[in-house]
Length: 430
Image (tube, helix red, strand yellow):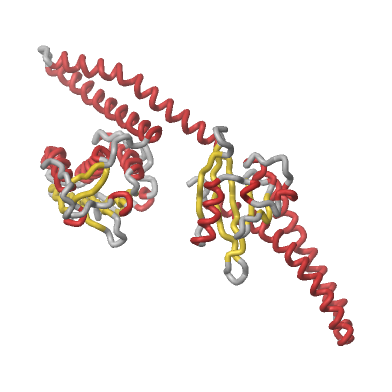
């Protein structure tokens, strides 16, 4: 989320409050005119009240003078903000807008004063932006959306819609904070292209190294030469794994999942994963068990992505669990109706300060130990991308010394297990 940084939110709320205050002042001015007429009639009936008005007026003057610098500061913040700010009513009338909004929305021919009172559909005819405002009023929660500023222009913006409340907590208006992210998206595409191109270029020399290692392994070599060859082979394998992971991430970011969703039998899939990690588990003295609830056995998903997620989480569980430990792979349906696949272990656990970054690429809780175990630092980043592509999310819960639980949650609409009585059911592996 681009605009969920606490400092950015505080700035947006502060400036948005200024926009709201400005709109409120216009309403209050109209009420004041009616109040003056009422006051005149009161003074005509009660002359004694007028005697106290000079002291009241002086007190009001002092309060006004004290508030003026703050009001001026907020207005300057609104005018000079690089982020676009717009306040919209329930009927999508623009109540207030700053110059940055007009620039980002390519409506710079208008000034902020003329733009106020315009319909939002005229000033910002972006369906995603209009829907974001509608959803904010409908749900009373903040919403975020990304949209193209002009069709085929290549320019993009992100908007966050936040409700503004009156003193009685009733929704008064919706504030849009808009940021042009065109340059950011261009840099992101450049990074993705660079990683993909470099990874492709590295594949050729790695293949040559691996080929020569295999050829030399069949030759008569002394103990020292054999040791050197094994070191080269191990490091070439690590480099090959890193390149493969980088290419997989690049493909996921550029094109997402390409394969169609098919019906999968989780009992068979879990069994295949168990077979693939058995040697690793036996070597470390770790017991791996599986459990599949009947209601979650058959699911619609993408086989390669789901298999990668499960195998990676199980391998990590084995890797960080000591001899005599346990790793459990379980599938069931959560109380929310989501498909829940959980991998729990009795390993070393993860400290709280690392949990928020555990799915970042190249982030390592224990860099030295991870490298010794041959990890690339990309596995969990790929897991997160695959989970998102499957329509779900991956979570982690852990405490040092108490093990970890990694959970893949897929919403009902994204997996919808077929009816048990469906005669067209096709089971994997017979």
